[in-house]
Image 1: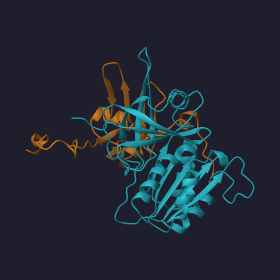
Image 2: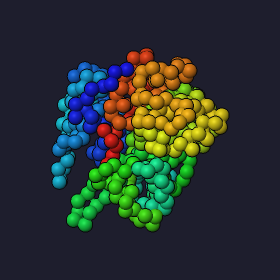
Image 3: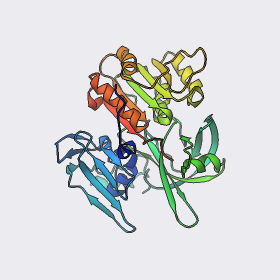
Image 4: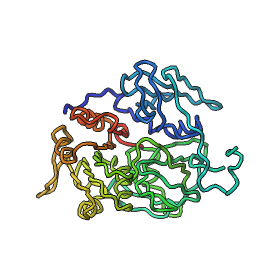
Length: 111
Length: 248
């Protein structure tokens, strides 16, 4: 096994798991176990496999197979800018009803 | 409706030194949610002028323990949050947290006793310890090999507990490697993680191995590449890179 030579940017590289909280803020549900497809190479995998670059002004998530950009996220004081052109799709699960919620509280979700 | 993503105020109830640079912090949570081993909490500190610093720390405790969590935190020189944890926080203090967070780098005891390969560098052992504690608490017999790289013997986190788990017949075998010197009579590896070491540790586990790797980015990259070269499908390799030194 050769020692992997990394530039500074790659030394600081994380997994999308590290920005799971930010993704949850944006989408309202846990996203790292949801699949996405890279628009560049077609690799389909859980969002948790994406490589995260978090040291810049925004967050960049790249495909772990081809390295191309899938998502760019920039937070401003009053909004979030999301550039998702690198993704064919994102899968956003419906929020789960709280398992230990007050009985009857989720009736309106049940239809 | 409250959820695990809402910030809450937790109280620090205990601090346990693990190594000269690592401590475990027990927090009591007003809104506790059962986590999955491998998940983390976000911690947010707010200064009087409104400046905020946020970090993610892996949960060290098993999900079977209710109402509280342990976060094991390494003190990073010049870190904004880890130094506050180590130098300022005392039992009784309150901290803003949210979690559990993350659904990808997680392991739960399942119906099949799949073999597990856990590879840790430094404080990357923390989420893997949650998996081992979960495995022990649920009496799971999954054959599990932990390959754990530390700089020196005094940098090994959870050494005594790992020794006990290693000896209790639960199918766990711990392999240590020390990269910057070792005590006399040391029986573990004494070099940086390499492909031969990874192969030696994974071979007895057979096929169907699920691998979880956590540590400095460079180490995780090297180990993940070695596993894929050894023929482990990338789908069975989950990684959590924490940069050059971990969350400061």
